[in-house]
Image (cartoon, rainbow, N blue to C red):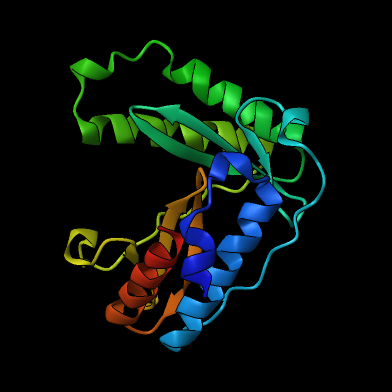
Length: 189
């Protein structure tokens, strides 16, 4: 059984590929047991993030996004066609927000300041200003551990294992997602 095979696993003694394969087996068993959808693996381009400027990330589509850590949050700056555009926007937002004393402003004011800096930077380099997402009012605190509600009303379950946050599956109901999460957790324990 998967549980027996994984019970004595020392993650530091196995390679990343082997740990990933072990997780994939436990994930498939748990998701299929509750009638969920087994996620397909995404293939990413070989471009190393170390080759990109600070704050710039390459998407599988070839587009670049820019993100910055500010005000205790990782904030999305925008989406761009080239890494140099994303880097310019990142540096512009960083420069605009460098002198802000966050302890002297409230959360809403900090968010508004970021939004202004973001809009100026993205429009200056010809990127796409991201739209604000509207989520349902259901609090994630009302959901079982490892279960998250998507705007579509579907539920996903994720688990931290082997130093990575791993996607378990997508489900119609929170109880299905929770059952899959608990099954994977039990198999990997």
